[in-house]
Length: 108
Image (cartoon, rainbow, N blue to C red; front, side, top):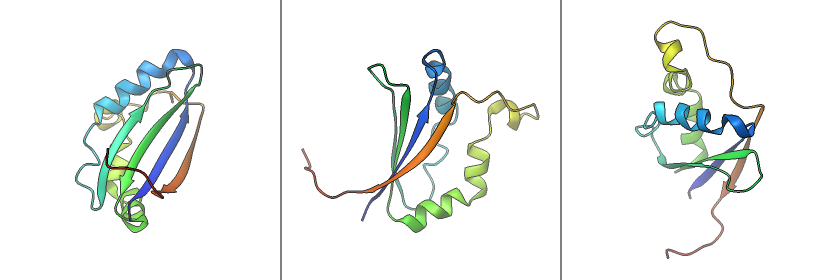
């Protein structure tokens, strides 16, 4: 059964583009992880300041294995950090993980 993980990231309105650029810079970093099924970065189109990072996994164990992996740690470092520099200032002011599983829907 597919497991859905949503990272709800609160981002000030003037920092959304920077968040999107940081995600683009590490696009594909999770693609080879066991059990990984897909990823979307969702940008708000209204007054909300929460961006959603939606990932789909074959199982909770697959997700936990990725979070515990060196690939996760490396994938969350900035290009500047990977080049030996200091970490950039965080873009978000808050983040929380929401856990879901598919309970219904359509193949549309």
